[in-house]
Length: 420
Ligand code: PMP
Image 1: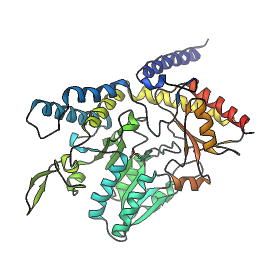
Image 2: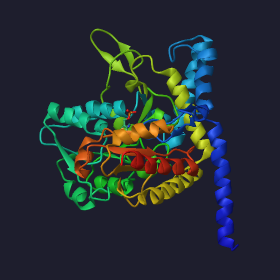
Image 3: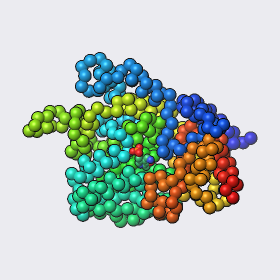
Image 4: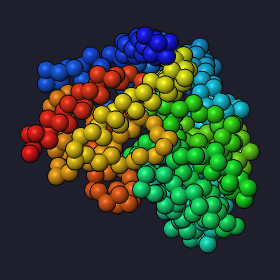
């Protein structure tokens, strides 16, 4: 055995041991369906939760439950501490400069709506342009369309090429004096494409245009450093990073957030209220009206700590190995077409099979215990671009294994046989 194969065998073994260890953190992976062990490949829709996240929420309700920020009593102080501790964990996850740049919201969708209605509505006027891309999730299209209707602004779209990459030249040409914001996804939920966001941000900033990144599909799969990216806003959801549903984060640069009007009015977001005039609270509370999802915040803080404890070197290495292996294996299947062949991808594989509807494939795979997503993935314009009504999407997380990819490929061969 030469030195190279020896070291790659060593790293394979280490990788295998790591994944087995991580799998133990996720009790749901022991589930059996139709006599088979669950193979969960729907991670782009939502990820499974480790014990540490469930225990953090449970601990909060069992020992610390009280409303935050307003109470003088011990439990309220404990709840507030847990809440603000989570904010710092999220700050570290994305390397934000300040904790008050982390605004807790319901998820990516609410984060983008907040920027559209607070930042956009107060600044944009008729004829202004907002640039999005042809691979956006509906939640990074519809809020801008709603804003365009309200203020008379215009949506411009960066086209997607056959490989599933953004057309760089058109993007550069779209940036102009009328452009008031660029809102693009960091990673495509349908194609897996990792967009060259740093370069795109630099190009926008050269025209003094701020950039919002939809980080829903990046946050659990890539190291995200908002200071290095220099993005102006970054949106993500807790449930895609092994945390709970109903909680997410809007990161914004302090100076921008400070200048923006509140999104919703209510308790906690004010410093004083009278019938004549109300003054607003400082960041981040100005954007956190009402009693927040405290348990969710505690849970997503635990998820951020979990990811930080594993580290992105190990996560990226493992998920890239899965993607390479799966792409090779699945490309060999006759009649199968992979949608999205960008040179830089996360572990997302969308495909169609000649003569078979994605929903039939999904239903067949489910009976084999394999969970994949089928449909338009909330990216209808992208489906139209590729001339398909739907795809089958397998998406990987840190706990998926090579043998699960083998099961997926085997089941695709079987479904072809059955529906022949
Ligand atoms: N953007 C992308 C790229 C997504 O994948 C998703 C979730 N599928 C969203 C936005 C919306 O996230 P949420 O539903 O958690 O608000």
